[in-house]
Length: 327
Ligand SMILES: NC(=O)c1ccc[n+]([C@@H]2O[C@H](COP(=O)([O-])OP(=O)(O)OC[C@H]3O[C@@H](n4cnc5c(N)ncnc54)[C@H](OP(=O)(O)O)[C@@H]3O)[C@@H](O)[C@H]2O)c1
Image 1 (cartoon, rainbow, N blue to C red):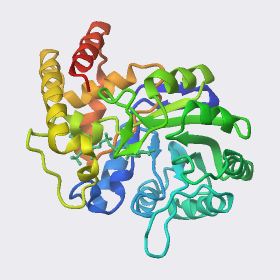
Image 2 (tube, rainbow, N blue to C red; image 1 turned 180 degrees about the vertical axis):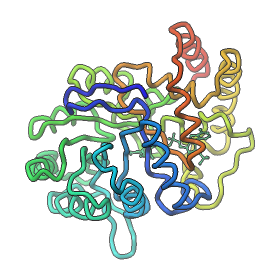
Image 3 (cartoon, rainbow, N blue to C red; image 1 turned 120 degrees about the horizontal axis):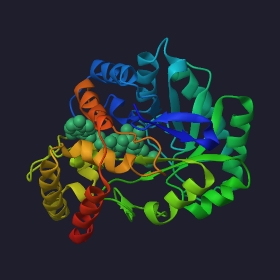
């Protein structure tokens, strides 16, 4: 395993991490079972992966329970990053809510589900959608930090400007955003406009500050695995049906680009998923590539990326192909 040093977190984080959204117990990511996910997590730990990203909203607590089960007796071997700010009501309607009382309540529920007494990183999932001040949210995060229930505080989907404001109230140790070989400064995620530009703004900022940067959807929700055909259809309930980039005309454009990238991967004799992971790992500012997986085989397959690295001219060639696509 390769590790990345995060000075703000005093941690050596595995360059390949594990995204736990797939453990949500819902059909969101295709037909796999809890046992598949538990085995995937165990395989990841055995393979040297030490960074796990989860959130209460993934299966409304379910993914945290699965992660908690899989890491029994291994808590000290790994880092857990969870999130706050997307609670749900009795009817299971999720809302954006980053008020102080919500954040303080969520951390206790998270720890119970995970079966631990601390998380390594507690991240605000999305900035407030209804005017809750950054000061209020960060005052809650500060309280969680002081209580020892979280070791570090992070932000996901925040702009650099808002991160700088947040820093005035609490030490921010990480940022997370949509970033992969194709989506460099994406304007939207599932039709949600993004207020940040990863490559232009977030990466230089996190690197200068010694923060972690965690790229989410590093495999473009599976598109960069290279396994999708040109008539890819997702099953009912699969979250990717609501990603406009993966359906209709826009999908065809992305598919053409993937076809070219696959040809390039073939030329260098490597599978596209490994190329996509290594393209991220190569970047100094990128910390742990929190790839989502469905089963242990995908973990094993992705771990093979750690056995080699892209050369500078290969990265340049990839960037040229992506730039020429206009996507
Ligand atoms: N902060 C946020 O707002 C936010 C948003 C999204 C995600 N995240 C985090 O980022 C993590 C990862 O992102 P993501 O789940 O959106 O997408 P992703 O990691 O880009 O893609 C995951 C999908 O890639 C496919 N895959 C992975 N390895 C493969 C392999 N070796 N061979 C073939 N296919 C492979 C699987 O697709 P199939 O199911 O088709 O096999 C898997 O479900 C999440 O789990 C979550 O922790 C955070």
